[in-house]
Length: 363
Image 1 (cartoon, helix red, strand yellow):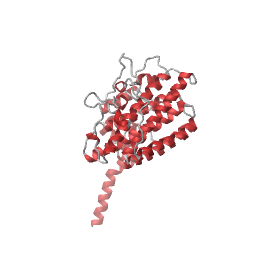
Image 2 (cartoon, rainbow, N blue to C red):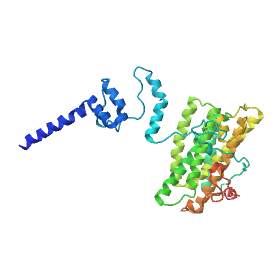
Image 3 (cartoon, rainbow, N blue to C red):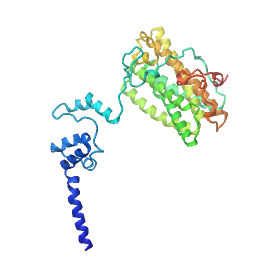
Image 4 (tube, helix red, strand yellow):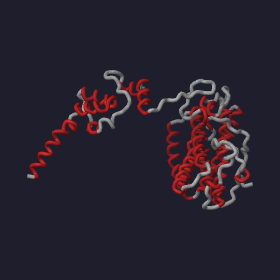
């Protein structure tokens, strides 16, 4: 008796749920009646006798997109690549997010998506470029000679092709700030402590280095094998620096400080060849003009000058961070906030006037 009743219950359940699970058209029509426009694309597919996947039959509303469906018979690839203005407006209206219109100071439309007008600045080119931290401890000496050893294959490969050299340099230079900021962020979360501004400083350092890369991509178009080298070098360097920062943040920041010193040296040679006429002093890329607020007639020489100043600021910040770590193994960065915080608005390491440079030079 119980077996018969279970069979009857099963057949009744199948009779009610079968059309919903195994009939694409009826399932989509029912979902369209309940969900409205979100299922219009599924309904059009069902009525056209096109098979509907099982996951869309089971979850027709949740799995439906909010973008418009391309017209049948038209250029499907072009319509998908360039959604209509109506589709964009519908999506923005659906999520309640209206696109903002960003303009320059003069009212012209802002043309960059990789940075915003409030992230631009004028570089402080008055910073001391010859400052050097003299290795004092064994760890400092290891960091110093490691960076010197890394420079040898770079010099052999790129020689005096400074545009490609700068491109490679920036793909590596943007890694330490991101790794350090990420690990300090996680430390702040698990230890319930403030960061003293260091998380933001290191992440903005990484962003500034990335903008250097975006600039030199316009100057030197990399070849395929140079892109392959970037992929390999970045993969090795990221993992090595990540492990090194876990073991000794002091050592990691010292390595970064010496890397920035080498970057200053490379850009100085780049500038020397530009001034000597060995390299064409072409007009500055438009992205550099907007990012550093350079004059409209700026040249590549002006770009190299401001990039070199940025590297000098990163040098001082990382040597200072290494110094803080050398004070104590358990030093809390929150107890040693970045110089300048509290006296002015903090806007990133590239624009940070450090008053602690005498501490980080080793002099």
